[in-house]
Image 1: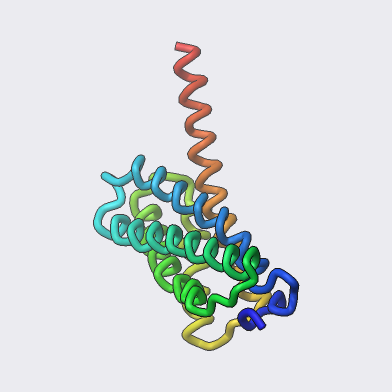
Image 2: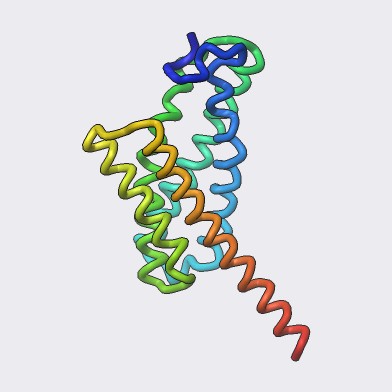
Length: 170
């Protein structure tokens, strides 16, 4: 049996469960690096700490999830040591919370995305501390977290398009 998930009995094992983590966390690591690169001067120490916690958590999660997918999903080898990936939710949640607070404080983007990447990890940490985790609650919080990052990406993309249009007009 691979892990303690609903996918544990599938032919691909635990790897199926972590396959989406690879691409999602690579995109999050790249996205936060781009966002931080553009706004580093405005985010202060809070943003810097949040950035480093998040980007290290995203990159580590992507690598460990890839290891699980390869070991358990491709080669059929149990790799319980790689399950430390589950603990990476803590630095990612704390980092995103700090980063989101720094974004809100800086006022660099519309508040919607920054609020979601601040509220979702705060709620996640609360459910972990309160031992209230359920599959649906965690999935819902991850959807909110992803929606926050998607909103920030949309805001950046919209700003870039508006800047390009304005430069063509002038």
